[in-house]
Length: 378
Ligand code: SF4
Ligand code: SF4
Image (tube, rainbow, N blue to C red; front, side, top):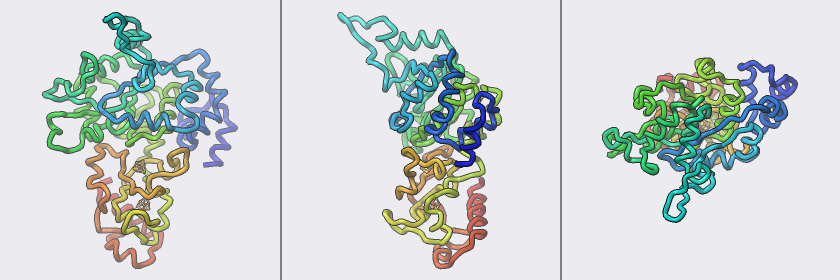
């Protein structure tokens, strides 16, 4: 990665084609990427000011938290460098909905409904959606009202004139935790922007009759780099919408550079050596492979093992938590039961307990991983 970073450093940013640009985005973290190309980015965007409208549906605000705690650059620095006008973001907007002498103030500075109406009329903004959209009860969307509107209605208004739509986090991508199987699932009927679980015919935009492409940045929460660098690539015109999306995104609308179809978290896990030697933790808090504690990393297509989290300091498995494959379409149902070993077939068809007692060669392990994937239909 260091070599690639050095090579990229010597290239003219403005002349990078999309493929090289996406390699740079994948290889460098947000800090290194923005640091390396800061001057070029500022020059490229001198005349541009991109507006961002960030809507919150049903969610925990964890993805905004993830972005706000993203470290260096923080969101304010990144937005300044990218010359982005964060025109609306409920969590960090100045106070809205001000009443004066018993009347709601009618200016866009103090009334977010007017602000949003103005932004939608002007158009040409990037719409970021965090959180799922309830369709219930009975298709009304009334399980989430903001002011006098359902969130379903608000999403429809926002999506119509958006230049690009990005769904951030598992909830916005496929419904996420809000849409997990439960007794009330049918009534609440939570949807992602473009998918309900793995079903693209039930995404909320389709329900609303809006035919627009959506970039999905899953995760629970999404990694700040995944969010910032995708937005950066769109803002800088390095991902042209819709022309480039077929090449850049996988079948579930995820940028392949962060969610590689041919790479899993398991491959770069810091505990991988223990897996290869068949040394598995039987209880939490130990130091070996977490497979028997339900680690789903062999099925998780993401770059967490390379990129790491919290300023590249650690990641789930490094910190002792089995990966729950939070990036999978259909999460969390697709990862259930959490913290339970996925199967006892183990490596290369051998029971995992047997494997733990014998030293296995790397080739056998690799074959085993592929076998496990095949069993999972990947
Ligand atoms: S199964 Fe999980 S803990 Fe074990 S090596 Fe793979 S990713 Fe790491
Ligand atoms: S390691 Fe697994 S659970 Fe953790 S963020 Fe990555 S994909 Fe999600």
